[in-house]
Structures are given as C-alpha cells and as structure tokens.
Length: 351
Image 1 (cartoon, one colour):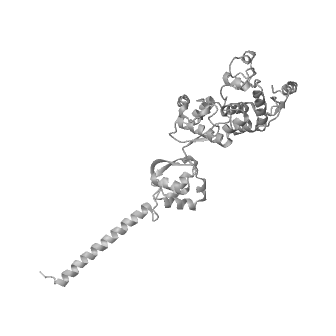
Image 2 (cartoon, rainbow, N blue to C red):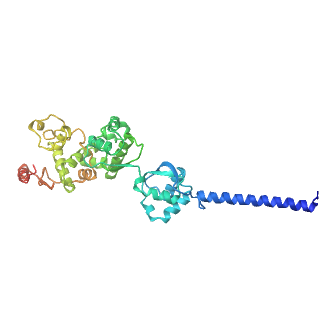
Image 3 (cartoon, rainbow, N blue to C red):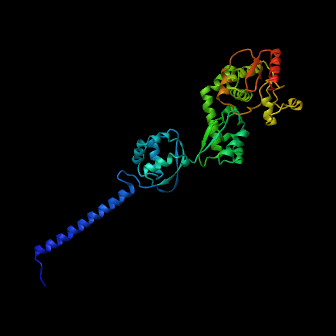
C-alpha cells in the first residue's frame, strides 16, 4: 500500500476541512434564504397569516401605536414593516378606533388592507336619539348589540355603579346621553351605561351646568329635568330657547307647566289626545294642574335642549303651541293670545 507523505496528509486534511466549511456556508445561505422567504429582509412576514385574532385600536392611536399593538398580538413581524406599509398607502389615514378581526403572522401590507375593509370591524354601533327614555334606550341597545335587555335592566337597578353625578340622587333617567356609541365585543351592560353617563358628565362640564343652574335659580337636576321637557315638547331646535323661556317663567311664578309630555311619560306612548280622566290624574307627573317640575327627567335631553334651558332669553313669554304640521311653534304672553293661537293650530289640523 502506498503511504502518503506528511505533506500529502496535510493537503488531504485541508481539503476535507475546506469542503466542510463550504458545506457549512451553503447551509447557512440556505437557512438565510428560507428565513427571508418567511419574514422578508425588513422583518416582515410573508402571506396572509393563519388563525384569528381580535385587535383593538383605541381612539387617537397613531400608526406607530397601531403597529405596536399588531406586533404584541403577533399579527405583524415588526412595527417598522407596518408603519412602512401605512406610509406607502394613503388609505391608512382612514383607520379608526374599533376591534378588528385579523390573522396572526400576516404580511404587513396585507394586514393593513384587511383592516381597511369594513368587514374586518367587529364592533357594534348603537345610536341613541335625543329624547329617548331609559326604557327606549334599553330596547335600542338590545336590538343593535349583543347586550341583552335583561342585563341592561339589571345594571340600571344598580345605579351606584354607573358613575352618576351626586345631584342625580341615584336616578338614571336623563343621564344616559344621546349619541352614537361603539360597542366592542365583550362590553358589559354596566360598562356601556357607564360610558353613556360619562358622556353626559362631559357635556355637563362643557355647559357648566351646576354653576349656571345656580344663576338661573335652578339645581343641576332641575336643569336636566326641564331640558327633558323642552326636548319632548319642541319640534324644531330653533324653538327650544323660547319654549325653555315659557317653562322657566311659569315655574318661577309657581304656575303649572301645562306640559302633556310629562303625563305621557307615565301613561306610555299615545298619539291621540289625553282623555279627561287622564288629565285629572293625581300623578306627580301631571304638570297640567300640579305646579312645579315632575320628580325626574322624562327622557335624555341633548345638547340643544340643555343649552336652551341654560341660555334662554329673559322675556315675558308664558304660553306656546305648535302652529302647523311642519312643527313650528307660536308663542304668547297672555291667555287671550294663547286661545287665538290654539284656534289657529286647530284650523291647521294640528291640535
């Protein structure tokens, strides 16, 4: 057998070592190539992802904040990949708060595209109009969201957990502010009602309700109560201030307000005229004959009605009546003027 020289053995050993290094380099390159195929050179995933994850975007979140949330929820590989995709797509400015149904391990541009589709939003929206009673509000929420009427009524029976102002004295009526609310999956009845009360508190602070009430000789609770009557009695917003003037003048002079709306509150919806028996009701909500305000608000008044009570003119008006089917209101300072307006209203087929 031929023996290799020492030099030959060294060359053979070096060749083996060199071959191993080459194999190792090739293997590393293959791994890097596969890795790039998975996450991309910029730290991005490839493809549409898998599974389902709900991602919450909060009001005021910037694209950077949204990107951080997506990384935390394992939707995108890096915040940089998403912000780059957002910067390249002007539609990203349309992203708003809400809960989005996405996938994990998504390519950032695909995640953005999915978020821009209305179908990815899983929030529920519920709109509460001005003048809705608490009962009507419960029915609307139960119809438009997964929150049941039973859960809402149970929450209303625990008013201390809703964040009501102290002057509400535990009464919820009037303090569930009319607005459009986004209801995210998992929101409880108490959480939503508390949000509505907080929205009232925000409006009350903006209008300086407690302080202004003292200047008007009314408590904050009385302002809300009177505003709820204005909200129900007025057809057109431009008439609200004068209607508030009438009621404030009658209240300050110790006269009955003369509002049928307060009696309808306890009698229930009724499109027809009140019967004689109903008009003689002994209910504390019968302001046809009982002076003063009813015990509670009769609905949730909006900003226009609240502001009308706070900033109404200081004039002599004492009466009003809806004068036509368009909802315009006419005003009077004397009973004789009022009687003429009633005749005119009846001639127009209104009353």
